[in-house]
Length: 194
Image 1 (cartoon, rainbow, N blue to C red):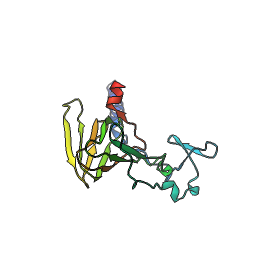
Image 2: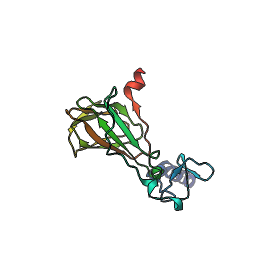
Image 3: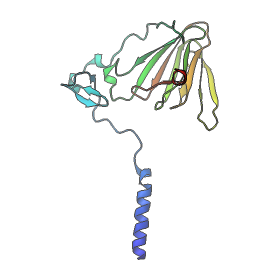
Image 4: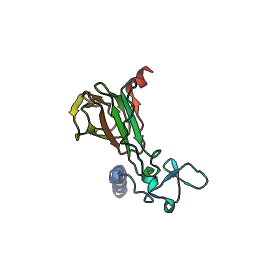
């Protein structure tokens, strides 16, 4: 009887702690890359997109041009977000990253308070002066802010409400990277009042 109890306790302990032994990192990709296509007949379905044979890929599948072109910021928020993800660069499919260019109008250009439920973001300022920040979670709801100048970098932790505001008298430009291929965005004002 004691032997059975010891075996039961040992088996229970192994099962109880087995999640701690499991790997929590992202799995390794099955192939080097998976260039996205819209053709369902000649593709293989991977990560929400169809992919073509990697032997058929070329440099154009991994290329985008045009981030040197200033975007129009004459809109209600005074900013324009230009995404660079699998839609613009098909070779980004399955690689787990994306980029956005954000152009801000002179004093007052705003990327309004928003959140990305599953993505951490890292922002680098190329031109202008931005006031940026995020709100910590419900533990203390602190506002963490910083004034950024060209060459400065700031991180927005996953899921936290964050913003950027141009406090300079000239246009501002920043790039924002994400470890998500195409991160979902929830703009707070739109989610609450519209």
